[in-house]
Image 1: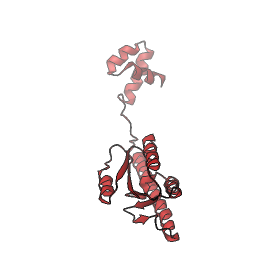
Image 2: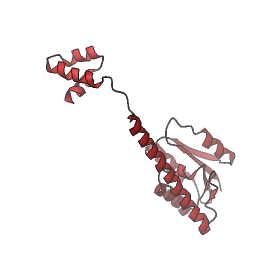
Image 3: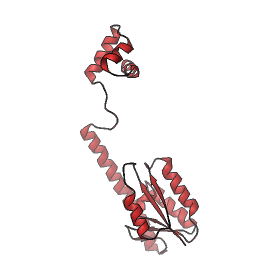
Image 4: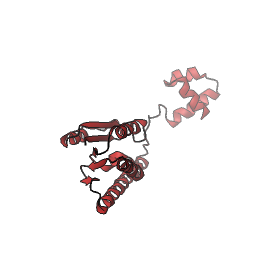
Length: 182
């Protein structure tokens, strides 16, 4: 009957330390952690390693329920997998413990999962609205503005070579070719 921790952050820029400290403070003997986007295979790999490691009677501990997945179906699927193996789950911040097999406890798991997904969807919506309002959708800024790109096309049509244009505008030939192809 071991306490096994699982910590996950969504981006490399986020910090795992808070989760790791919390998991250690409740006595986790081993902690699996992942520091990648939820779409990354590394998350699946760490969760898969955790699921392979835990044994019947163990308890998997997370700081929050949403650490187990990016959607309600993923979270509930993981909880079902754990339950099917006779493994309990505790979410520290949400005071959730699946070792309590009562109908109320089961309903709480589903409600908390649903609220976690709702919160995540709100964050995504706000992020998308912010990007639309600012016009900044990420990515590297273009080296040449619209006027310069139009000049490149005009000068190329007038006979200047891609290499000459690349040198004149301080960009690579590949950039010039992309501008010309439009």
